[in-house]
Length: 111
Image 1 (cartoon, rainbow, N blue to C red):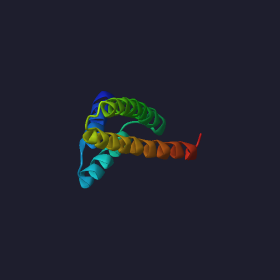
Image 2 (cartoon, helix red, strand yellow):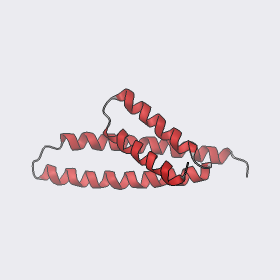
Image 3 (cartoon, helix red, strand yellow):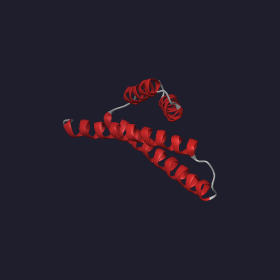
Image 4 (spheres, rainbow, N blue to C red):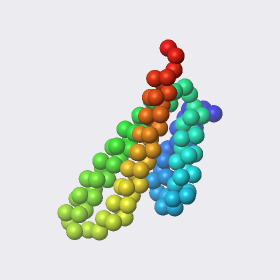
């Protein structure tokens, strides 16, 4: 499978994970996300990809936090946005755990 296709699958899974409310489906999507990342490339390459996903997630979270603060200041209901933010943070946490596993794997690898 080509790297571009794999990237598209990963981004699609990450988007679906952010939107999914069912904990069983969330677990399945998180598992698929990690498996798809593992299918492509060596540990160092996967680490680069995980860090790109983390950077993107951090940016999206920051933007949503700003939007929530702006809407709250105007007195708008932000319940749905806050739930989406919590899900996005969960996805970020999954990528962070994955990055930690990759770093540990690289530390154990022979040079």
